[in-house]
Structures are given as C-alpha cells and as structure tokens.
Image 1: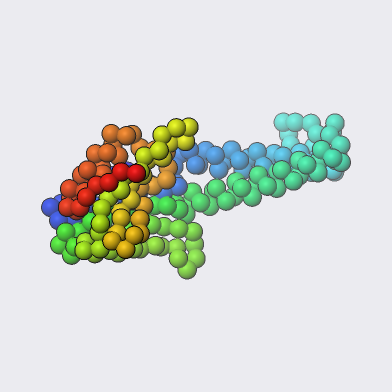
Image 2 (image 1 turned 135 degrees about the horizontal axis):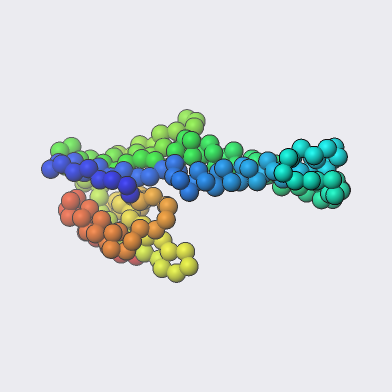
Length: 186
C-alpha cells in the first residue's frame, strides 16, 4: 500500500496500480524488442534493410525470418498489452474503513468495460477477522484478507512485490484494532 489517511472515524489506505516505473520499463523494452524482431524478419523477406543499426541480408526468410516475424508480432502485442495496462492503471484503488457509517468500502480499477470500476461495500457486523497470510520461499507472498462471517475472504493488499514482514504485521495488528475484530494467521 502506498499511503494511509487517518481521522478519528475514517481510515483510508491507497493501493498502487500497475502504473509503476518497472512496468513502464518492461512495456517499452518488450515493445521495442518486438518491433526490432518484426522489422528484422520483414527485412529478410524483402531483402531490404529496414533497421538502420543492423544488417539482415545474411538471414534467410525460411525458417529464421518467419520465426523473427512471429516473435516480433507476439512481442509487439505483449508490449501493447503492457502499455495499455500501465496507462489504465489496472489494480489502483483504496480501502476505506468508516466508523461512523460502520461500513468498509473496497474500490479497484480494472480493464475498460462494463466492470471497469469495482466497488465492494461491507457492514462491520458482517466482519469475522483479519487474516494475515505469509508464505516464504522462492516466491514469497504476504497478504491481508478481510474474512467475513459467511466464509468469504476479500484481499486487502495488492499483489505486487511482497511487503516487509514487520510492515504487514504492523498493518494487520493496526487494522484489527481499528475494526475491533480478531487477527488470524494462515
């Protein structure tokens, strides 16, 4: 989570979306690589150098040129997808805990369409606990979930790089105290 705003009656935590420097870097790198492969493959077909910094005259179109065109097309499509995901800031949102209305609002942005904005609201009386899930290893996962009495577990943290263990523990304890519910671990 990026930032948290506090008042006596409202706590609002913001969630980072996909608009990050690392995602922008990978979107540009994959797009440029895909375009480079595609143009190199086309250069081998037309026997004309379409890239000023390389010479594709030694590449035969079958089979190397076809493979380059294929990989270039796939790379370009993936690059466009990454650019659009970053532009739309998929995953951005906030968690708002309001003691006055005794309501929790979870808001997230998704891909364009009918469900572009997802807004979930829960009453305090529906809450069971805050669940902290920590998995260590090669691909560590550290997440917080809002557990409801009907058995649903709603994720509260983003799925980006894992937060520091002390940070997620402090956030879980603080949130459980704020909402006056139990804290459980998985």
